[in-house]
Image (tube, rainbow, N blue to C red):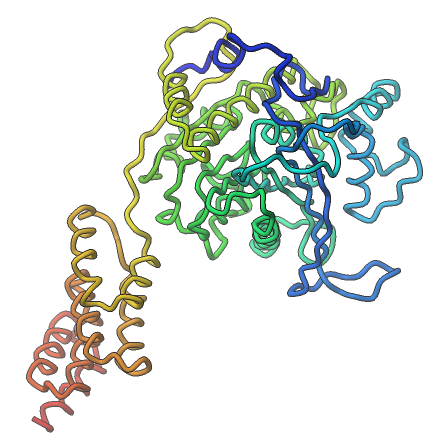
Length: 511
């Protein structure tokens, strides 16, 4: 494991004058904003494909998705948002009534984590985000943020969102709300709800002219990290994934995210950085000798960043808000200063996305230099780097290739891939078999069905079912000799295959 020390050092401070930066809020601490003004927009969109109980004053039972967006913007003379505005938006996320800034609708971490005087000062503080200003010229990578359980409000990570936007990213998120009510349950159904919300946000953001159509990153905190992992596994468009203290490295007591039907580790083939409490790594991998997801992950680069804290809130913007009281259900007594930790997390996140979303080779080199730096003065974080292999085409990409180009034209490419990845499971036997039957019976491509079933036999030579299907295809096309040969091979592999036995008798009678 190598040291991360320059996250506070010359990479960010050397040779830079603060005067070149956009506006900066005192809430950002020692973080240096980038070249852009941070713009902010909140839009409300209805996902009419999903049910959600309507408020008492409305009649349409459909899901409202409030999309918070931070983006690189043109300079403007408008004032930035006061922190109180974010808190009022958080109250509106869940239909709470914002009577005064000191009413019960203040988020619990603020209401209990700060005394009256400090809370009042925070609410009056200015953020970096200027509302509804024009986007800067150009297109920018999109980063979509999944919120966490008990940290459902987007204000929970507003510092990281503002910081990334000032450095040339469009960051979008929405509140974490359960399937049919505010309550979020630890089950696959509500995890799917968050995944679908994030997909809805992605779809909307990609209609915006300043969003890059092909560069997509995901950040997930806590439960949002589980949602981000599932989304990264099922959506090939995701280019990089950053998880913050999410229960995905060694699994979670709830069984999530593994119990989600779209959890497939063989599809997790993108660059990944996991930032988490160092005690979890020590407890599971170092003491119990349990292999982590990073240990199992085969393809693309992975980074594990252990953080020396036991405070889950240190991975959120609450670490930047001067929290000083213990808050039951969130964190215990504050034993050390949280702000430098969250600043380091923000800087590390920026380097990661610069390397993999902006395709900046110098930033990638910087990331690797950090991971291999042996200097031990003033370090806050460490980085463990695992170099992954270049991933092969996905199983679905190969199936799509066969369908679109035809098995004959696709076969040379498939053979090249098989040679390059001899130990990889490039096809699912049942899926390939199902494709063969589509060609044979429903798509009018009977000759290609033979090629598909032959490919399946070559991939799974010990499967009785592959020979059974190939025998059926030859029988349909009138080649009785080859049909008999393959049915016999199927029966040799599985003497209990009654279908092959019946079909063999039928073919032999016709022969």
